[in-house]
Length: 221
Image (tube, rainbow, N blue to C red; front, side, top):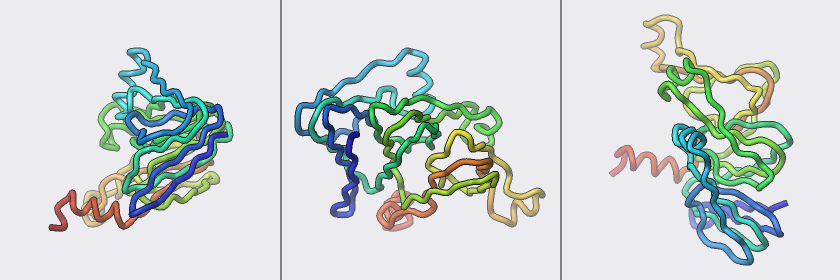
């Protein structure tokens, strides 16, 4: 199996992947540099699949790297989370996918029309879906915690869930039952995850991503 290493240096993180006659795929434009006998390839998807990926706000093309050597992907102020697929399909939040082994199948999952609309994502909300066996790497803005649901419910105010197993149901609901309570609570809509399965949750950011976010929103000079 390909060996994935998350390396932290000078306040940034990057991904190092060691290949031994193996294949990985990664987000388009993620390559920094590589060593060894590695072939880079990129297949053009069908028109229908390309449109779906654009609607999902994901790359139309996922380049592959095949051979023996070392691949370094671009650094980020965020970090990366590596986890193993065990024949359980996972649905990833938008922008979370970074890389995966060649044995992992990449597809798309569409949320229901009402969930998409009330979640503020328009009429069509598509997410990257990974299945099969192998390692998957996610971009994460904070420390990642795995949460198991056993016929339970998790309610989140915001996009704190990076990924969920496909058997976990997802919907959006208003925060309070009455208009007055809705206004007083200061909350709008909540994301509800329920059933039996697993979630990958990043509930608070790294200090560096929080600082960058504050600068972008002009909270700091």
